[in-house]
Image (cartoon, rainbow, N blue to C red; front, side, top):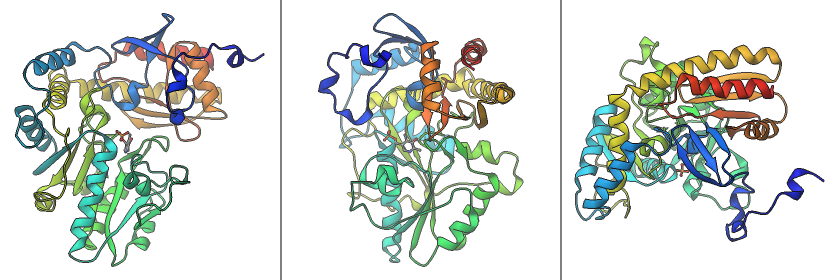
Length: 399
Ligand SMILES: *Cc1c(COP(=O)(O)O)cnc(C)c1O
């Protein structure tokens, strides 16, 4: 009898909609890079809540922000300003560039704003088409699955939102051929996350920016997974372009953010370039919870901690170390490729990634799946070198 056949059913699982399939653990507490399950087993957690837990688990700075803000205001709606929202908007503009910020609660919602921005900009000229990349992932709303360049998220849900075209990623010629007089925007992830951690090349980004300028359409950036310092820079284009002199002053027209910026608190945002800031005018969009004081005060605390402790530098160095260690493990024949930066590293394996993942789990290391045959290392930005070495030790044992 296989071990899964004799596993006790998890009490309560029958009440949960089966969208995520079976889950291997019930987690009950965490501390930094570590989590514990309901049987007291300890795990090194490099799934990071899928690129969310920038400061790890149970961080005192987040605890304090939650405590202090909840004593004042948790929610007031956008009928009013609130101080944490004003401060966080200013912070995001300072980190990005001249523009303004719309707040929401998740990555998919942030991408909805990108899509609405493109449609509204194009409305004047009759342009409505949005070009996105094969393999991309933009969330599970109707806009998100329509934009996503993967058939598996669309099947069974037609009719989808019309007006999306998918082209191969990192292929400027393909975008050039797809752009026509109906194109309103090109939308990409700087580093494709769900597809298996595939960074855009610097030539592709520079070329896309020039092409979209020339064709008078928007360049929209899904920075949900690769943003908020995960790669060591605030946005991944800064990291990808840092050695490309042709890229000075590169800006997308709008950037979707979520995941790491809340450190675990649901918060999303869209930075909109100042040239476009009047497109979504009064009454054009909204969110009841978006920009609530509790979520914004946590995001501010996360950014403050990253800056004060230079955690962007830490995660950058950790990522460089991890890439070089994993690359040297290629000799075992099991690891095919290593991609990414900072706390967003993809390890492509030969054979069954799911099986490797569950063997690592049984050794106490949690990694996240990505694509068909890639496992993601998504450690918090304050992870120590020693913890990464412990994770590598577990991997070596399994290999
Ligand atoms: C996770 C993710 C999303 C969706 O974010 P949610 O918060 O799950 O809605 C969108 N785009 C990218 C690139 C993502 O990684």
